Amino acid sequence: MKNKVLLVSRLSSAVNAITKLLEENNCEVGSVVSDFQSAIEYANDTVYDIVVINSPIEDSDGAGLAIRLSTDTVCGVILIVAADKAAVAGAKVADHGVVVVSKPINKMLFRQLLGVVRVAQKRYAGLSKENERLRSSLEETKLVNRAKFLLMQYLALSEERAHKYIEKQAMDMRVSKLEVAKQIMKTYSSKH
Image 1 (cartoon, helix red, strand yellow):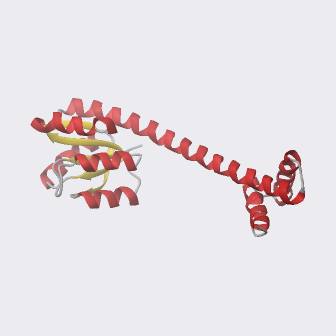
Image 2 (cartoon, helix red, strand yellow):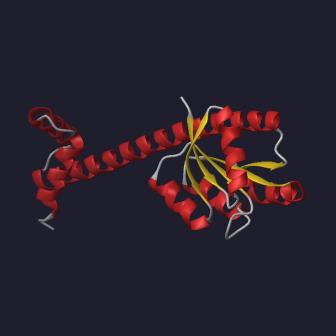
Image 3 (spheres, rainbow, N blue to C red):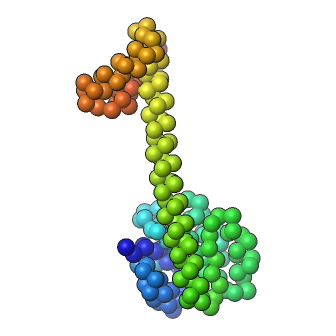
């Protein structure tokens, strides 16, 4: 499966060369933009695996955009910079997981770095998904516990009986415990 890429570059000649390089490495350029704000909008509206920023872009050196995208999305980010600016750019983005590639691009090195970015992006996306699942599970547990507390308070049930009540209601109504908890909270929270 090809990786979907957002390419950010102000130079059309560079777009063609980078697109060709990406296609040779099993990537598909989904969109091309030339500035910071457009890149943010595209990255928020569409799921990309990788963002490649050919610095400088229309309104910045690209490092700020690279940091923002690596922080706010699950995309792998590659920042391409002039060789004389690579050390400075690398120092700016190093703590954010951005890979810096210097111009002119060494095809073999680019292929290797692209592989590293792919692995890191997949791992990060998996961890992000697991984190969201755990967050959702924790939120559900909190709501079910609040509902149990309301049952204990208003119906004088023990914690165990309140828990069994919620489980039985969920089974009888063929809904989740979360739905039962929400209904209990709606019923008893209004009695405050």
